[in-house]
Length: 390
Image: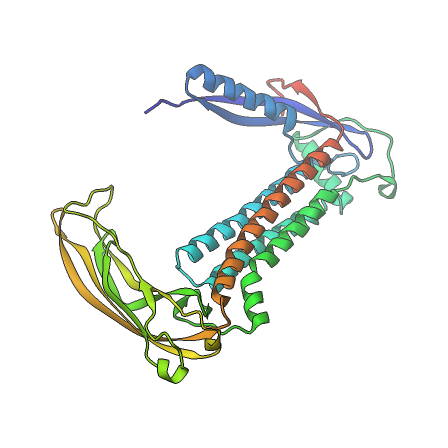
């Protein structure tokens, strides 16, 4: 394995700001402890130096002007930037969790959609928190805070400009148009994740508690988990003698009482290898294909399912033996319009992808707006810090 080298560096310099509102100059000591990594010691040291230069040139601490109390735009941008990053990551985490739950059938489609909606809603609230951030709302309090820092030596008022009444100060904007667009895109992401329940409610489609997805229409395929568990090495099994019947087919008038069904069909030979080879407990299931008969919409089908599974069962000392067991399951399913289950499933994953796109664009737009906000500040002046400096 290749060696990774780490180089640490400490940054200590004086940063002087010129207030955008009153033109006073004030300064403080900026301290950063950074590190760089690389495949060689020289590369790690070079990366550490790059990080140090970036910190000296671009990073600031949060200190309102001690003369007028105004927080500088580059300081505001740091806070807004961080909040939008959190908003985007929280929303995208929800999309990922929704995909894991939906594709892995850990939940039905509707709960998976609600998970995505909940996370994107939290992300939207955080984006609103960033969008309405107003650090210059109370200049008197800001000024008092910085005057206290001056008294303790943490901050220094280098040059006081001509005093102006607070009402005359041109306080900088805390947000840009891009921040408002970012917030709107986060809200749009929430709407996108709610496409499945909206589609189901508008269509009046019946839902089922035992099928995945929960809406099943003519021509759709749905998964049904049995009540019985199967204990096999790494969840392997192979289905035989699979049967799925509509037991009330005569009453419903369907021409296809026997349904096509499938389950796992794995092979394992005489040895099973891997990083982790052990018994695991899973639910037996069948994926059932329903007949393309539109007249079934609104009708309740009674299903009987059966499968004989052959599976490797661990018996200790890295040994296993093939076992066979018949699994049976009975349930009911209320049919929706033709293809409604497929439409619900598609609305879910397309909605989640759209939400992810909105969140990514929102983050990019907001970060660009933060860069613009930083540009509204007067460029800082950097001095070497004396050993006795604050």
